[in-house]
Image 1 (cartoon, rainbow, N blue to C red):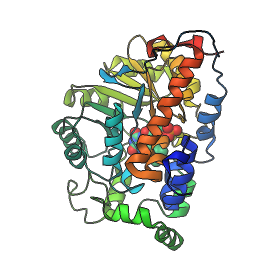
Image 2: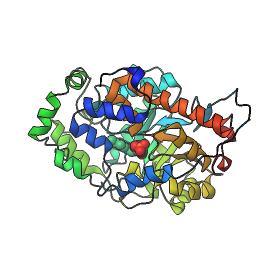
Image 3: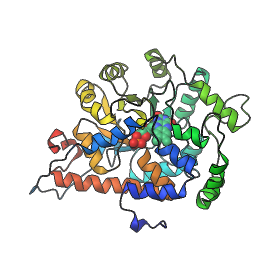
Image 4: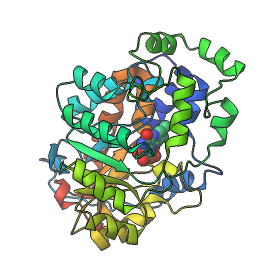
Length: 381
Ligand SMILES: Cc1cc2nc3c(=O)[nH]c(=O)nc-3n(C[C@H](O)[C@H](O)[C@H](O)COP(=O)(O)O)c2cc1C
């Protein structure tokens, strides 16, 4: 299939195209969940089981998808979530995705484990973006990352709390995308069959973790940097560390990776602006509940104290409507835009956002709601 915008009608088309254009090791990395992928599948299947309520003869001629997320105006209840190594799905991927998000009027979240650095992205775009933080053992490095995010005028800090240990993705080990990386010969041959990707990555600013490169002492190459990252996830992380981060970052704080009511209450007590109900896209605790099944309980418990955002399995505007109906203020997407990026760079990410926007508009119209604020459980059967 050639890249022809006219033929792309849904996120799954972008996924198919990305599968052809991105080397297998990186496509698999994006698509996979941990272990048996039960939670990955549950994220999708539980969303699909939620039925929307068709309504008729309601004037929906003036429909508006605009809303606010974490204090900012957005054109859609949607943000691009943090995705590690976006710049290996397509060269300069973080910059391209950020530009597409900003052109569409929604936030982009840069992962700690990005290929482009905070400064690279800040220099290439003209509006603030969100920065996602992994708290590593080296607290001096964490402090410097927060300072760099502040210097780059990032408008929110997204603190990810569900990765004290790493869930295993079988496919990454089989592809040699492990710590340290050791890509197998067949993966290297497979890369050579993706000339568009090779060109894009070769012309990209960097090929390693941009936020770490040159900032971590005595790390001469990608291998040692990857090893350093692997050794840095901190099993001692606790709510005390969140208090410490609060002192370093007085601005908008979003706590990402909450799947339990008790944890949601603790997150609300921190004074954070928002939390994200998330199981890391089914990449951490396999066997955990789907993200959407936990959303209503969490929204009921803390929705009046803290903004409740949602991610996990969103592939369409219909999915966003389902999540809003169950109490989310807005949704984040991971794979849906990463597939767009692999399919067509910046234009592919824009396409992903536009597909979701149109689907949301049509679904609002057919459920008889005109404003995001009107969406509640009444749009569900
Ligand atoms: C390839 C990939 C890398 C990810 N890297 C990060 C990361 O660096 N930090 C983070 O907080 N979440 C990360 N996530 C989780 C996403 O932010 C998000 O929670 C998840 O993708 C949502 O599920 P979805 O892909 O079904 O939309 C990653 C997800 C994927 C698919």
